[in-house]
Image (cartoon, rainbow, N blue to C red; front, side):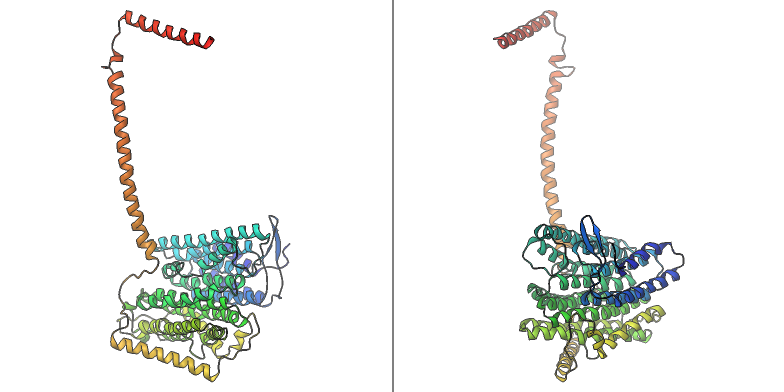
Length: 567
């Protein structure tokens, strides 16, 4: 019997009924009310409350409430509200229902206390989110959505396979801490890693997010990868391999982000970079590190959404998000520019902005646990973030050169969403205790020490200086109209070529085999025709005496066989 009503069900029920409601503004208003109700339920949910029911002999737990699930549930509700406000004038029933179903599935997964419930919600996020890509209505978006869906559904298939093997081994489906000591746990780990965009498994992110609608990209940025971060934090805290996976994740996107022309793809790469910090925190696994992961996920959802909102507003007004086609927009879009700068300062971890009070927890945890090389990698990655997101996004969008475009300011509902998100980014940075009180473990950390502030400002100012020198020297990568591929080159270029070559060789061999077989069959048919055809010897008129002779021979053979059989 269900003892409590999971907040995810509010999203799912309303998402199902929403297309039946007439009036786009009415549906948009309902979409704002749903995450408010969810936030209220989660905020007031007592710790340890369960909502359980029996399912084919398994006890499924839909409401495992602790501080880790609560902080992710709260920020997912906030993200759903902000993205719905940003998309208030988008009255497309498909996008509206998909957004609610997507957010509800993510919240349901956060509160799932067992791996079977997690699987259902895991796949729910995959199926719902793809419609935000397809809603763009282009042929490219369709193919991108199919690639995205294959990857996301594949992650779910691997997850349920791992769950089955784990249940066979342990007899338990509880979603708790696991150890990488069996094939089942490795498969679960891989499923989480795909959704978290681990290195070499990450290209679905840069491929799909920029292909979604203006508002859909904002929604996508909030849920899928952060759900994977939650799953790793719940299932694999302290798993050492995550430290090094996360360190690689912080580094490699920097170089691709620097040369990328599409600013939404730049943000997708920087999202991958920021996930790396969270993965490192999970791998370290200490209370401070896990607090840092939760805090950074919370802050990241806000400032990344803000950056996607600002670039999306520019795309909405100008029809492009290419850096080579933008510039000078501060003249007619000053509010959007201000909000973009707030997001850039937050992701760059400037003091008094949200990224400063969250990222520092992970950096300090890596230093205090003796992972000095990893700490240096994270410091270098922090400087890279300033370059490709803190500077490149606002600079090339609003200041780099005058593109001649004079678009109107963003619509009011978009400005309200960006303004509220920017306010939260600043509020968390100015008053971090508000965020720290929600973290899974008690926090005894003060980010605003003199040494910490000075060292961070030194890092940021030197990164700014390096950017200025590179720009003045003409060394900084120019904004070119080009499509950049990284590891996806293997399956978007190399693999098709290999398949084409193998197919051509196989076709040639098959044609040769078929040709040989057809020639042999034709020869046999020709021989039969010569023998049994109208002009063949078998078809000729035989004399009566010859026929009697043949019959006599057949009778003699029959008698001989019968005689032998009787002996």
